[in-house]
Length: 225
Image (cartoon, rainbow, N blue to C red):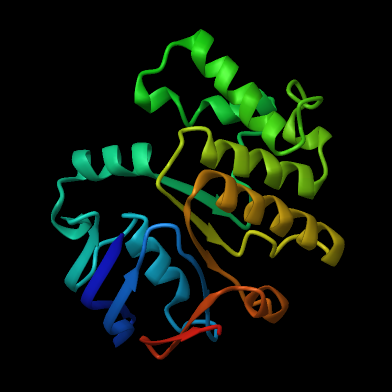
């Protein structure tokens, strides 16, 4: 479970101080599916970075299962990210010179898993997202939707506790958007993940059980009946 208390984030933009987050309190239970929405510059991606341990708050606490990510050393924070948190980004972030299976395997290298098991787990993860016939294809040989499926497989192959997605359908057309959302929702249900997603797409937000709206660094959570 995530527990955020009094989380602020400030940074300088020229002579101006930007308050990206202004005292955010938020509880995200295990297995929750939360969509984060809000205007550009409102703090959506900043909040996701806090949840993923990719950035530290100016003040406040960001706890994952009772551990305050903001207080961990960089080495321990890297370990938490490697073991417990999967990331999916808008731009896929695949390594262009590696094939699909090799890209997925990269998530297992920091865990010290042996090569044979890495290959087996990567192949199984790709099969779970419908890409078992694309193991040896390079990113350039796949569509945008297929590349995002590889990215999802890479995020899930390490069996994380939380899956964080930042505009994962932003580079896809409507049909591919629906396809990727079907994959993500299936993975959420099958793996019992805590699934947190930033999106500007209102059609996606309408289907989410909980929506957190951020405006000017403050947050409002709406729960569907």
